[in-house]
Image (cartoon, rainbow, N blue to C red; front, side):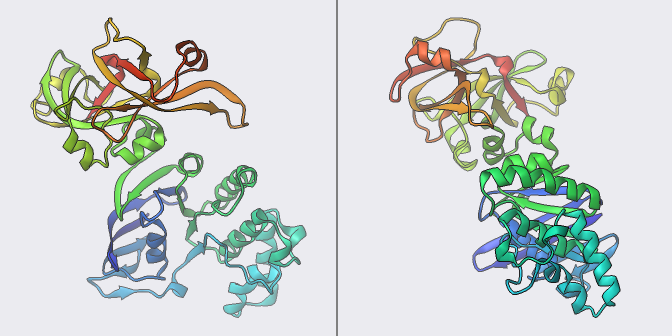
Length: 395
């Protein structure tokens, strides 16, 4: 188990977080540029020193401010692969990998055996005598990973390992890297700002924002229960924060969304009335449904989150009549025709509807045929509706 609690301030940037990572699996640290992801890796590796906290792996302490323990970077059994790889340009792939072992003055026979093993592991045996300039970006990445793995680290730190690759190479290397990590069975922290990469690699995902850990969990947890507008945007849902105005039946509540709360959550609310507030009728998720609504745990005035899938929103040219209890009115800001992974048209269209008083639009997803039938265009005024059962509430 990797156990981390650290706080550090670099200039005006404050990083303060605590988490645990299970052994022998890959954990992804996900966040926007500037969230503090790379700084966290450098603090773990010992390249930077926290102001206070604790870092331990497999019951061995590598940093503890209270006990005044700070193991130097070169003495920590951690492998670090930097975003730009940092291969020695004058050394062959073989010598780049062997560098760390030679620095430890290990026997030549042992070095040859270990380097040969990792070259085979990353499928680069045929390129052992090439210089970095003679290798593609994906091949350089494999050598950088091999250089870290040859030291048999207990913890592998990967800083944006796919960021320097073009789109096609990224797809190829993503699968190869996943296989490498699976075969090594080493505890791994992988940093990325790409949500798809986090889903592909992460058995556990830690989401960072402005030096804070704002959510952690598996793919299903993040998708169904986003805790911030950032995570909601990544998973592609509309996000509200507000308070319970009243409880209806055992599963339904009326939620008041205010402009101030939306701003506190980075402008994540998607609609507002003229007075800067919105009432939504929402249904509780499974974790809060049925009898729990009648308990003191859930009551009027309590803070709540509501999310709505873009596909659950119906667009109308006239104010609709029907069973839907949630209505919006706004102006089309953008119409985006979605593509598949292969670049083909998916037959789906995402419509961004700008609602009065808010900067963040409501996102609806409809079929391309519906968009053509309605003759949608930017600047057009539309109505949108959503059933209470499609507005999912949770604490």
